[in-house]
Length: 340
Image (cartoon, rainbow, N blue to C red; front, side, top):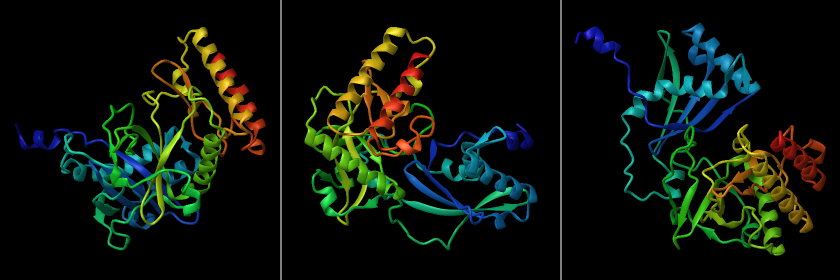
């Protein structure tokens, strides 16, 4: 094999990686991606001034910020931006040691991993990763919100080190966030990750779960149930531990396909109507009602999840957010979606 053939041999793909968080500002052209790979965390700080050596790369970066602003532009999405920004890190990813599948990992490992901070610079029309020394924060957690004891006291709390991460088959692109977890008593749960800006939704969700607990609905009512909180000694809540629903992460959005028979569609409609009526009878509002917040389990039964409030355009009108009327409006839209 010639040296030229050796140079042109395609690189092996990097290990699975995913973007945990992406932030950018409307006031300037700075942005940051938080990427996880092989249990390590990479914070990637991007600045337009770093690309001045290559007008082509600078223009590309600024265009991708427009893509992020509009979610999609000229056939490109923010996922294309992630690929473009992360590719210079692929050689680093390939050199990372693979995680030992026989080793036990906990949420503490996820929240407090070994971390690296980089920026990208344009060098001879190439994006080159460079360690970024100006960032501070060390190994401090990037996620979670601080809640007062009185809001958390009605619920069981567990330390991140008390919750074991379960390996799951990857369906679609890896999310990087643990889902299925095991508690010390052997109970399986679903870990719902809390980001720094989620405090309002978390407070609303805890109030709803408290109302659900006080209403004591029948165990057969297919709604998500709160088992406890993942919280550290300083009062930072990193996530919720919800009763595990064996659904393979299949939502109503992806379950409704052209080949789904009408009897199954009608079954889901009847189930959702019953669940929502029961919630409203207990004075509980679903809130962000939409097909993405309906899980379809292995038995092809529908479950309602996510009581954090808010609304999604196209399903709940903004003026009806957080109301019974908003739920009923969304239910009508969901019935139309399932019946189509």
